[in-house]
Image 1 (tube, helix red, strand yellow):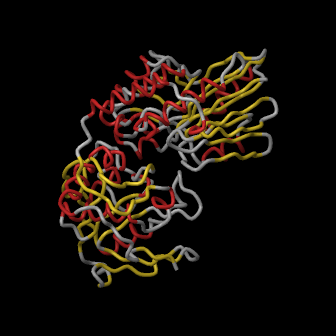
Image 2 (cartoon, one colour):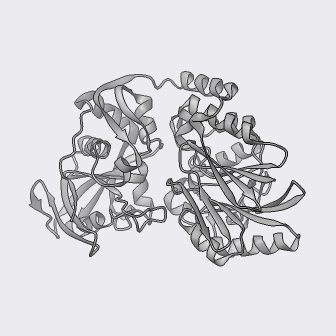
Image 3 (cartoon, one colour):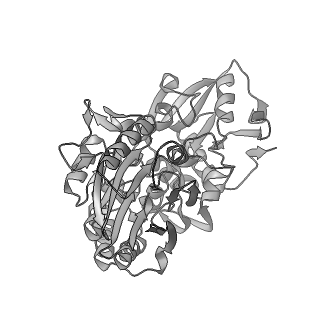
Length: 449
């Protein structure tokens, strides 16, 4: 029986030696001679260790599990394309991606990057190709001169080449998020192993199976062919690979991020609900810290920038706050008119995003109170300090510098609005926690009507 083991978006699992060790152990336990092991992007970053080591820590995991192939996610370019190539060259697996170029050629062609590859297991020939979201350059400025082409065009070319080779199955390693549905509808693929969106998915679109195992290495999916059945393995129930646990523990000890900055009496949740479903304590903490640092009128934090994980509780360290927003990017201040700021608030509705899910909300705010009408997709009201926005007045907004580069998340604000940058985001969070403590509350800043 041919089996595919699918992991994706490991991210913060690199900061949890036990979980990463159990993910590796689960893969090893489920693997046999008829198994293929695949990753589908964001398996080098982000997290505490990814930030500190610039992705180096992923090699501990890769060498332990020896995947058959991986594809790129947008975060695999967090430290630039040259650093990505450095990691690729030292990783044991090939990297498959059909829609990434540099200088008019396949990105990484001189290393182990190729658009597709054929594997043989259980007497079957499996053609595999990779895709990454074409929005990667927009959502990750560190990609520099790397170009991400139309994934459907690239997929059609890859599938034609694989079918010409007489493969029995075609499998896509995808980091397209919700684009997987379009891919399955337009291209002849048997299985789409997906990533990017952090919600788990098992879906069938006609004869195509689509899967996503979620985020942070908590779940491993096992797909059988030809039946296309899916088994969900919860990693916490699996055995530990002690070599992986030891490697991660050593790196964490060497990172020097264990300074306690505050003590939390009531745990601050970092679940998907807390991050993506409206106002939350964790979102208010981050947005308040931004406004405190810059004396801005409004603090704005995108939900996707807050990484889910264990609650902030008890003694909170610098490492905990890096894990919360694990990006080596500065905080910025933008100046917007009241009219522009209203549009930014309206764009907090999150289902429109390429990685959005139903009922998501994508903005955490400080200094503002808004009401949003989902039924009519309109901003019903917006006030600052109890006063309505003045369309002609200029307001200062503190936000992640990344949002000024992205045309996906809050396209109403861009680089032409930026007036200054300050320190790295987690440094701001740490100083705010030291100064003001860590006891955020939910105050009715965001209301859905």
